Every structure is written in C-alpha cells, then in structure tokens.
Length: 464
Ligand code: GDG
Image (cartoon, rainbow, N blue to C red; front, top):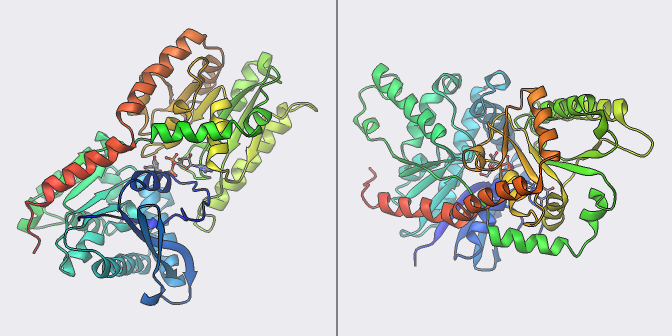
C-alpha cells in the first residue's frame, strides 16, 4: 500500500512529548497521526561526523519516524548558514540580513543530497513524497539523479519573495531550477505563487536562468494550500487545560484586569518590537487602562546561534524593561514576558482565557497562533483577534479580525483599544465568521487538497 513520506528539517520528538514551538512540527504531527505515514528528517543532534548507521527509527501510533544527526559542519553551513542566514531572511523580505557564503550553499546542497540518499534507501516505488519547507528546495533534484520516480511535492511554509528580492541571493537560478524538479509546488497564499510565476516570466523573457533549456519551459504544477489547524483536536486539547488553574491564575480572571496575549518564536519577522511600541503607545494615550490591562508575551527562544537572533532577544528585553519601568506600579506589571515553551494544553488555555490575541508579524507565511487563538475562544464570550495584514492568515481571517499594519504604531494602539472595548454582539459575530473559515479550511483540507493534486499530476510526468 502506498505511504505518505513526509520530509522536514526537524523530526519532532513526538514520542517523548516535548512541546513543539514551531508551526510545521505541530502541523505535520497532527496531519500524519491518523495515517500509516513515515516522517523523515534531522533528529536535532549535532555530531562530529555523519554516519549512515546513525539512522534512528521509532513509531508513534500508525506513524513511523526515521531521523539522523547532522555533522557540525553541515549544521553550520546548511542549517545555520544557508537556510537561516540566507533563505529565511530573504524570503521574508529582509535582504539586509542575508549573509551569503559559497561554502554554506555547498553544505546546503550536500545535506539535500544526503537526504536524497537516505530516501532512496527507505522509500518504496509507490510511496508519495511530501517535502516541507525551505531547507529542501534541491531535494527532488537529487532524488531524480538517484533514479527516484516517485511523485514528489514541495510545500513552502514561509512566503516566496518577489523577484527583486530573490535575485539578491547569488544562487537564485539554482534554487528555481531545482524547484522545477518537483511535481507540485504548494504555497500558503496567491501572492507567494504569483511571486514565483513572476520570476519565471521575467527569466524567460531575459533567458537568464534556463537559457534555451526546453525542460525549463514546462513549469511544475503550482497551487495555493493555506495551512489550517485540526479544529477538534485543538478543542479537545484546550479542555485538558481547564483542569489546570494555570490559565485562570495567570490571566487574572478574578479581577478587572484584561489580558492581551501574543505567542511567537523570538524571531525578527514576528514584529515583537513594533508590538511593544504600539502597546506603549496604547498605554500612553489611554491612561484609564493603566493598571487594568496586561500584555502576556510568550516567546520561546529560537535559533539562538543564528545571526541576528541574540540581538532581537536583547532588544525585546530592553523594550519590555522600558515599558514596565515607565508604566508599572507596585501592584501591576504591564508586560508579562515569558521566554520559554509551555505544554500545548497550557498554552491553548492561556489563549482561551485572554481577551485579545495580538499578532503583529512583519511578514509571515500563515501564522497558526492567530488561528489557534480564534479556535479556542469561548463561544458565549469570545475574545478579539488583532491581526497583521502581512500574515498569510489575514487572507482568511479578514472576515472577523481587526487587521492592522504593524508599522503603524498609532493605528495599532487604536486597534488594541477597539478590541478591548468591543461589545459582546460584535465579538460574537466576528468570532463566528472566523470559526466558519477555520472549519472549512482545516488541517485535513490542507493535507487532502495538496495530496489530491500531487497524486493527480505526478502520474503524467516522466522523469529523465
Ligand atoms: C512557520 C511559518 C506558518 C508556540 N509557542 C509554543 C508553542 N507554539 C506553537 C504555536 C503554533 C506554532 O508553535 C507556531 O506556529 P506559527 O505559524 O505561528 O509560526 P512559525 O513557527 O514561524 O511557523 C508560519 C507555519 O510554519 C505553518 O505553516 O504558519 O508562517 O513561519 O502552533 O501554538 N507550542 C507549545 N508551547 C509553546 O510555548 N506547545
């Protein structure tokens, strides 16, 4: 029987129950759990050398995982270097943060090739391979070199850059050529798909990447598959949190204080500094709210050894200290900043108990926290989502969220005020419109739509 083989950079420790603070891990675990699927990737360990014998196999329900360590050289060049100091910043519109080095790109290619060799050993001819994210743009190309004729699809969880940004990466031609070896490329939004199409059009008219290569004239199939959440599972997980008093204690339900919650990895794309500036502005222009509101900022540390992440952490800490120092009183801390991960049920409980969900991403593929916030709200007294127009989720949740431009400090402060004072009827109406969208475009729809298209297109392609 044909299996779904998922490839992603990190294979999450599902078996150990370690909380995963990443959208992809949460989505893949949820999507594969009901299937006889195989999940392959890096186990998170860094060793001196890479040895084929270090592949670990484990099982979690019907799902199996195959994971292996990376060498310190691969980790530095592939993961920290090319993936996170070139692709991540450029794909999020931050070419100023790119640090391109040829040897890092070589390490990226080496790891993609190594993953292809592992796949060649473990996949069966009728398996369908679903590759996730920007770490593996060259994987299908190496799989084809090894003679794998399976259907191989690629889903990009992050945005795709406009051509002028993509072209800042010296090896942009190689990236696009490699993507052409996939049978299907999936994006979070129309805008991302248009960005690749527009690169291809420009390139064809200029004959730069592909020259006269006829293969280049057959574009791979592309589609838009906005990632969703598992609505029922999220609801059942939040029920567990109600057994703990964590959410109620922390969110101060007994008093008059209202809570605004933000949850995001400590990353410069998430707009943490802009958010804190807007909250500061809100407190400054609404003195009646001083002492009656607090911002709960949950930011698990992420990629702490990648260039720029330590700096954003220091800047956030400085700004939190400034806001607390300026407005705090002996009985009131304006920003409750937590630099760690929570168990999933506890996290969902905190989202549920908060009156406003605040998402201020400067650029974001989707943003699952926005969807989770809406999903776990109490139907009889729902909170309000304030959402950046630059998060992919805004394409769907614009039916009920207050959309903001996170760079506009004053407008965001006004949106916070509007959310905190919104009448119950309007809150219910907005919540119910968003809930319909979440149920319609849930995780199963994402997975089924992508795989349906992958099965449909792969059969017609003969790989040379
Ligand atoms: C990438 C793209 C896209 C967070 N803190 C804790 C925790 N989380 C969970 C959240 C959510 C996930 O991690 C974060 O997902 P996001 O989508 O918000 O962001 P990224 O990590 O940047 O994800 C993004 C996503 O991939 C999926 O395609 O939406 O645009 O950047 O599920 O709840 N989970 C636990 N403890 C925490 O402290 N257990």
